[in-house]
Amino acid sequence: MRDVAFSCDDNGAKFLRVTVWSLLKHYRGDEPLRINVFEGFGGHSAENKAKLKSIVEGFGAALRYHNVEKAIESYADLIMNREKSRWNVFTWTPIFTPFLLNDATGNVAHFDIDMLFNDDVSKILDLDLGDNLIAAVAEYGKGDPVITEAVWGKGILPPEADRYFNTGTIVFNTAKCREERTWEKILAWYRDHYDIADRIEQDAWNALYWRRTKLLPLRWNFHDRLIKSYAKWDLSAKYWQGNPPQECLEAALDPAILHFWGPKKPWKTCHRSYRKLYHAAMRAVGQTPPRESLLAPYYNLINGLHLLKIKKRVA
Image (cartoon, rainbow, N blue to C red):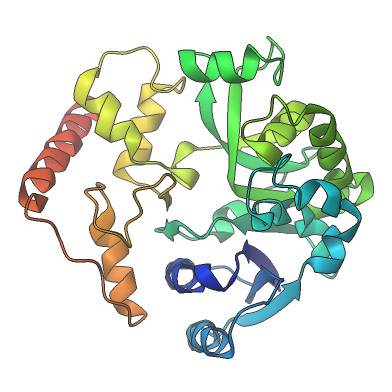
């Protein structure tokens, strides 16, 4: 049995169904897959649980829910303190994945719910992580001036670190994480540094474990701003957001996971490059996509031209 996990309250259940459907549609692993949902503080409604169960069982997978309230009880002074954490409690629950999935063996993964899968997740679940604690995707590098100041300038990462990873996709070496109780160390670091940590647990992961993180190709946590901005304005730049352009280009042409982070979500009216893929997934789970705006044909053309530039650059 292979395990993957997601975290959300009942308000995110609708989006979770789309993400889980896309993951299971592309899963080709040798072992059965089990979907774990971290919930609490009211949990998920019976209706939403039934809808997700129908999707999961339709693919021959398993589903279970975990109440996180007991796990975070010892850290409630930090996690539930809006002045210190400034984020929803379910932003924190991914760090407890190895602890909450105490019967899982091998690697396990946690994913954000604003994602769409386009490839088989077993390709990263089956990685040999060696002495690494986790695997994740680099979001920024020191070539990006804004993040350089926000991360390296504040001392979150030392000068010898050259990439800053995003924890939207995170594969855990569960045995080593349990042995070292990484969740406790992350919370202890954040308790001492919350005044400089704008990205909460993600900053803590990077600060503590940048040396013990296996970096995955960008395609496993791809954000479309890399083609909306960089490909449009500067194809010759040495770095795109601090990442090698060739890696960004290859990810844009063949994204394994599309991560729609930021305020412009594809379940709302927006002009994101890959929104139609998400809308197709919404229809597959019985949801109605948002209406396209009158400017949609114009943005479709612009996005198409961006991808054409990328294809020419790769070729």
